[in-house]
Amino acid sequence: MLLRKSPSPEATIRSSEITPQSVFEQPHPTRRRFLTGAATLGAAALAARTIPSLISPPTTVEAAEQLVTIPSKYNLSDPETPLAKASTYNNFYEFGTDKSDPSHEAHRLPTRPWPIQITGMVKKPQTINIDDLIHYRPLESRVYRFRCVEAWSLIIPWDGYSLSEFINFCQPLASAKYVQFFSYNNKSVMPDEPSGYNWPYREGLRMDEAMNPLTLLTFGCYGQVLPNQNGAPVRVIVPWKYGFKSAKSIVRFHFTDKQPETTWNEADGREYGFYSNVNPNYDNARWSQAHERRLDSSVFPRNIPTQMFNGYGDQVASLYAGMDLKKFY
Ligand SMILES: Nc1nc2c(c(=O)[nH]1)N[C@H]1C(S)=C(S)[C@@H](COP(=O)(O)O)O[C@H]1N2
Ligand SMILES: [Mo]
Image 1 (cartoon, protein in one colour):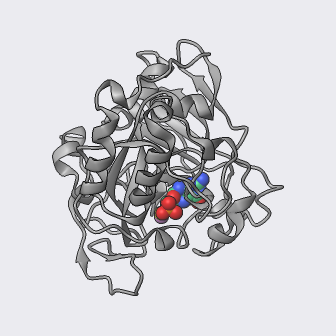
Image 2 (tube, rainbow, N blue to C red):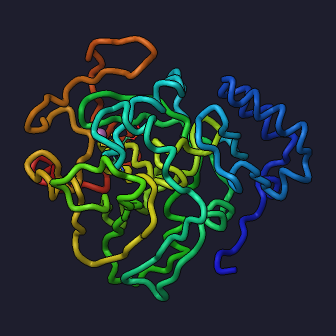
């Protein structure tokens, strides 16, 4: 096998400590199900990181089972957006442009088998499979602020590990300065994919952004596998940038020395810059970005002041020292 298997979470945290701690810190129904699951599976199954739901992937949120995750130091204490909201109000244009389209259409996405290509400026280009990627490192549950350019925001517990761990596995050459993400693209399961864009969906990060420990290679949310509409079986989450930087359903990681093309920058470079850091002082061509609306079970006005870097300035502002963020928007 190409990927080295992860040490189990028990290597650093005893299984007896994992569940009570995460349930205590993040009480919600999913974690309570996790408790039940852990009791049924037992410590041996947990140690082997058995994830039955990933072998035959669920097609609905209700059917999705939990992932085995360990708590993270990156958690926010803000109240979480209900899963029912986070999984029914989505942007996943390949499945249609209405916010409700992906939750109706994305069940067609075939999430197994799911080969992932590693290409470009790496020591050795190769293809790996999703299950080896999931098992590579213990998954952390990280409650992140997530902010879309259209000014809605959510608080979501994402499950994954730092993208940096995977990039180190890829062994990029020293000359590689960027990593580009390619999403799955297949007209036969995406009949409503709008014309006027160059598919597949592409996004990218500068290497130091990609290596920042906050950038999450994400396999689940709310303690279960990602609903298809949220980017199953693997996506990135870049919490200090607008949502479109967080590419869904990734099939290829490409390393390059040139700033890569991205779908939204190509579609409208005036509105969507390569960097797209959350910035209340810099407006999108059509909207003010100064305030946001927290997506919740009821409709709220756009009355929350947006924070620079989505509130993650302590961890990421240094990446942009000396850069004019109005020029590099
Ligand atoms: N492949 C792909 N990834 C994508 C998109 C898309 O249309 N296609 N939309 C982006 C946008 S605009 C946002 S706001 C987020 C939404 O993620 P969520 O539906 O999990 O909240 O996904 C991003 N990733
Ligand atoms: Mo977005």
